[in-house]
Image (cartoon, rainbow, N blue to C red):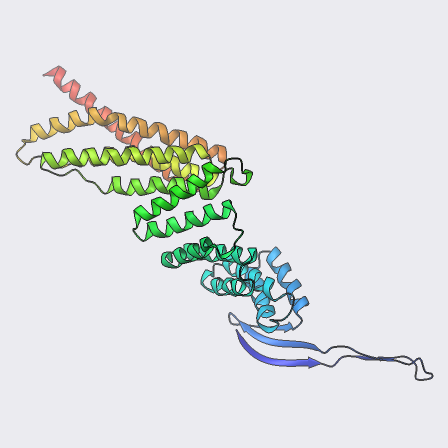
Length: 367
C-alpha cells in the first residue's frame, strides 16, 4: 500500500455571542484524510481509528473482504497505540484469509501473537496461522506452529485445542513422509478424546474425525504402494502385506465413519469402497508367467475374475451406502462426485464381465 498524501481539515471554532463573559471557544481535533493506493485503486480515507474500524466491520459483514482488510490494516499500522489496533490486526488477517491471501494474513496473525503473548487470543491466532499454512501446504511451518501451541504457548490450553494441535502436527508430519510420527500424533489425539468423552465440545469434533481418517490414509498409502510382481514367492509375501494394510486402513475408516462428522464421514465412506476397488484392480494387474499360452492366460483371467468379483460387489454396496449418507448430510462436493464416478465404473465392469461370461457359456454349449 503506497501512501500518497496527508490532508488536514482545521477544526471548527464555535463561539457564542461576544457580548458577555459567557462567551466560550471550543477547539476540535483536526480531521485527517489520507490518499492511498490499494490494488491499483486510489482511496481517500478519513484517518480516524474508530471510523475506519466501523467501516471495516461493515465491509466484512457484506463479504467485501478486500475493503475490510485494507481498512483494518490502516488502523493497525497507523494507530498502533489505539484500542482498536490489536483486534484490527486479527480481523484484518481474517479478512485477508477470506480473500484468499493467506500469505499476507500470516504476518498480521503473528503481530497479534506478539502483542498478546501467552493469552487465549495468541493461541487463537496461532491456530489461524496453522490454517493458513495448511492451505498453502507449508508443512514444515505447520509443524512448528503446532509445536508452539502445544508448548504450551497458552498455559491453560484446553483438551479441545490440544487435540486440534496434535491433529495439525500429525498432518504436517504425514505430508513430510514421517508416517510413524504422524500416526503417533493422531493416536495421542484419539486417546485424549477417549479420556474426555463427557466433554460436549468434543462431540462430532472435526479434529477427532480428521485424526481417525488420516490414520486410515497412512495405511491406505502403504496398501496402495504394493504391487503384485513375480516370482510367486514375492507375490505371496506382497499379498500378505497388502492384505494386512488393507485391514488396518479398513478398521480406521470404519471408526471414522462411526464418528459421523459431516465433513469426514463421506470421505471415509469413499475411501473404504476404494480399498476394495483398488484391491480388485491390482489383482487384475498382477504379473503372470510369460510362458503361459494365450488360452491359458484367458482361462487364468476368467477364473481370477470369478474369485475376486466379491470385491467389486462389496465396493458397489459401500459406494451406494455412501451416496445415501451424503444425501442425508446434504453433501454434494468432491467426494460425492468421486463416489458416483466409481460406482458407475464398477457397475459397468460387472455388466461387461457378465456379458462375456454369458457369451462364453453360450459358446461352450454350442460346441
